[in-house]
Length: 631
Image 1 (tube, rainbow, N blue to C red):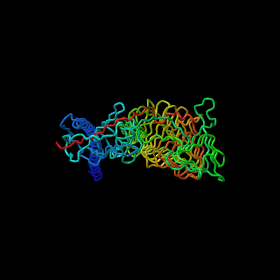
Image 2 (cartoon, rainbow, N blue to C red; image 1 turned 30 degrees about the vertical axis):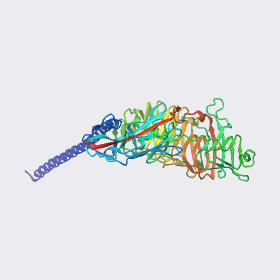
Image 3 (spheres, helix red, strand yellow; image 1 turned 120 degrees about the horizontal axis):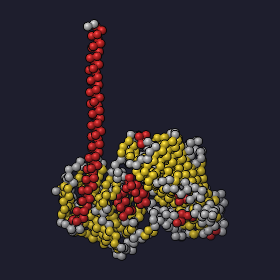
Image 4 (cartoon, helix red, strand yellow; image 1 turned 60 degrees about the horizontal axis):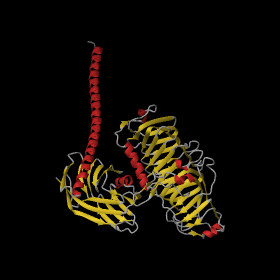
């Protein structure tokens, strides 16, 4: 054999060995990846099954604890099995305080404690006679506690966990600790009753109070929820053009200008005709301009204050000051408190979770895998966000939800993205939304659409590229924003005739910025030729709200309902066709307000169906401790 032949044979032998090694390596890599992915999927399935089993065991615990607490059985045993989580008693999980609203006298102040099953950051807990689930950021109700209405009587048999309770195994025994303790209220009740729950599961309690007891949530923060038990009427419309309904002074002396009138979008013959039914109302005092000031206030309607109006109202009506009121100027007037917004926001977010959160999602790597040419009919999770800077993309969802499984957001800075609803409803959920140009179209021609945003929602266009949010069709759009909300310069929101857009902003510590930036075209919200204000609602429990129309005007048709917010900065030209409800104003030196009240709002459905909240005339509260021990 020649040297050349021997060399060729050697090369072939080396190639065969190298090929075998590469093949084996590829096989090992594929098998390893498959095992890893399969293992991850198996772990996830096991975790889901374990938590579902724990929910069932904790619900059984709820039922058996009730038997023990109320004398139906001397003891009961509950098995939690040998899952992958930890069982423990948390004595610092929360408290409940029940008190008379006006006097503050406490009827009961009890530590609730909780029996908790925790796995990978998810907790299933028994507390206060109910079962709750927390995923770290938010808690929800699994099984309702025992609050019973019977006619005009409310009975609260509160079950608490004894200080000597312990649990660190899989099985526990429940026994009663002493006899029930009655907490006597002055019956019949002559005062509203305030109930406050603090602790890890307060949001679940908030959902229970809102959906099961017809109470009003009057306060909610990072660690507590407070509800008021009383007789009331919910959903009576919006009565005031501009309501500054906190107790602070509404200082008209410092405002740049205020002009107010009314129109009636429901008037078929002349819906935009200027009328004299505006109402400017202050929950505190009003300080009005004095003679010689260049600023002016013109109100075609009434000016009302819960306390004093300075200077004397007679001087205003006699024309002694640069303020003109065509209707009544009334101090010591009856000013209705605004309906609390916190409970409505809790209910809205919970309805979203209940509608979409109980179905396992199919995961996709990118939005392109979903395609934009076929309806999406199953709950889907996309690993990447949706980022569009040109062209046109459409995603149609029918009775399902599309969400991002990671930290994916929706970013549009050119082109058009259409989210289309089919069937009864469609859900889309993103980490954040940034509209910096182009157009986001929400199509509700054939169904209602829910858009959930877990972080910031921001609109701000530039130059010839405005940021547009357009609602088409005649259905309902609900946007749920959980952090800062900003609708800044070159932003256009348009709601077609017959459609409705409700924007729920649930973040007491978040900010709302409307308008801003230098130059440009400002902010517009439009709702059709008759300008019905009831087509656009912004509900918020934020503490701070800013209007900036200094360099470009803010022009809104709709209702801004933020009864907890202080307007700490307002400047420039601000027009609202509809109504504005806030707690008060701080800095409005350069603000030039034009308020056009839509009289159709007086009978608009604000928070839901009009219903009577049960009258609490008799209240019976008892507490019963149970002891939990390892079996």
